[in-house]
Image 1 (tube, helix red, strand yellow):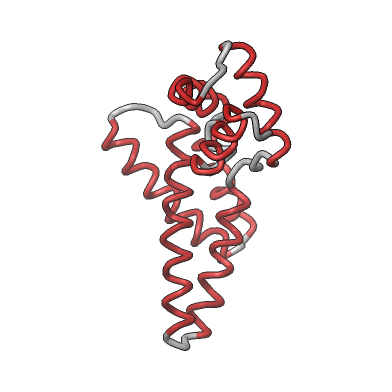
Image 2 (cartoon, rainbow, N blue to C red):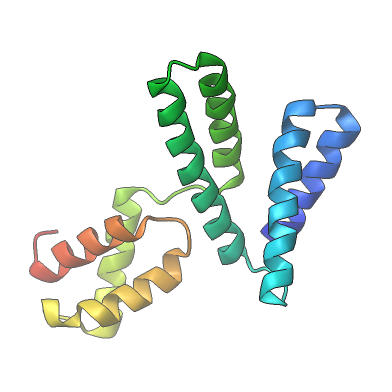
Length: 150
């Protein structure tokens, strides 16, 4: 079962159990993902769902900062709860140690030896981490491993 189907299942369960908060948040997520599916004219892959959730989290965090700056505690509390809920939908992020181990194994398999191999390394590592690590963190680790710092 893909992430999209899992989110739909969670939405249905929230509706059946009467959890208004989860139902409300999941309703928005499912609705937006259905529009995304229509726009792409194909089934959504897990990477598409993860990208949508990350984008939504980023906008919610910006909304939280604006609400706090404006002194709107009610909106800030609601937004904070939504952020916590949405973060639970995302897969567990890789720890830095796991990422370093993966990058080192990719380096060995590709035979990479210098910073000139950065592009090949990034492409391979990003395909393996697929939503489990931030791109900027991957770039930092790949760069450090290629320079021999890690």
